[in-house]
Image 1: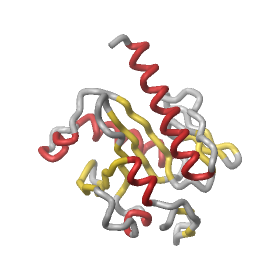
Image 2: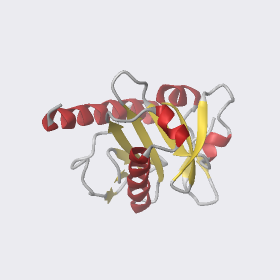
Image 3: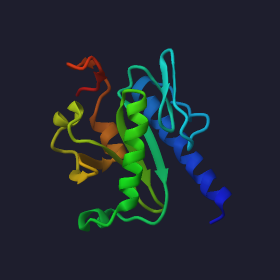
Length: 171
């Protein structure tokens, strides 16, 4: 695949994820961040960009989107998934810059879209058992992976101020 085609695929995926997350969270799409794919970080008023999307201040995550080939989900279970580790480290660095939680949304051709977040996020402690998910150790973090659409269907946006003062989502 040509480099320009790979970039276009990534941009389209970022737009699709931003649209779905934004509509789920507040009824309007989250725009793709200018300079997405670079190390740019912006915090301006009520909008933050530390990943691939501009998100509102009350959205608890910084979102990184990856639509790439060369990985399989089963490779994680045998410890051969350096690409996922690389993506997760990047996601965590970007989230830390804007004091948000890391969220990685990823896919490849002919595969579902997955979401990866820290298992310690409050929202995951109250997600119903009906969500299909797996919990693994990645880069010193316990992380939860589940199908993106299931996450959005089962987790209802709301407000919950935690000890840290950061808003979260609750069921």
